[in-house]
Length: 227
Ligand SMILES: *Cc1c(COP(=O)(O)O)cnc(C)c1O
Image (tube, rainbow, N blue to C red; front, side):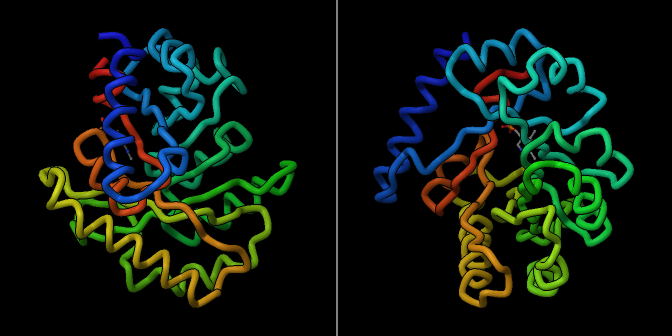
């Protein structure tokens, strides 16, 4: 199946999920995760009208980035080593995996030369699985305080992943948990800007994520296949 056909089906599912939750589908941004696929498929994604592309390893994405460049808005969704920040800074507008102070410091330093702050989602390990990256929910407030005055990064949201084996309903408490954490942070006003975003939901659970308030869903397999 072509990306365009798959996208039509996905859009219908997004609309239905939004209707169930009383949300406007325009509030939900699709990030096409092309990490499994080739440049040709990434071009198909753009031709289908999507502009947000998610990737998780610079070594793999580099040829795609060089061919596509600013025709796409790039999202870094994988765990990010501090020494790799220099490779991606200025190329990726969004980092979805901010999860530690050393990484925030390096991003803030390397982004100083850019015209705009680099937009970041703080990754939170809501499910508490040991294999997952991200801050524990209890660490979030202190972390936000510690980065609040870094002017070259801008926290725009929180990001999480549901456990691998949880489809749909089992993921719901993880997603609603992330939403509550975001709402608490905004209520406390410890960050100088509102934090509106929720990056949550993948191929197996994006409808539940939308029902729980996702503003960005990260779709790989369901949109581009396995490559
Ligand atoms: C690979 C990946 C995705 C996409 O996964 P699918 O299940 O194929 O949609 C989303 N988010 C992150 C962080 C990923 O690494």
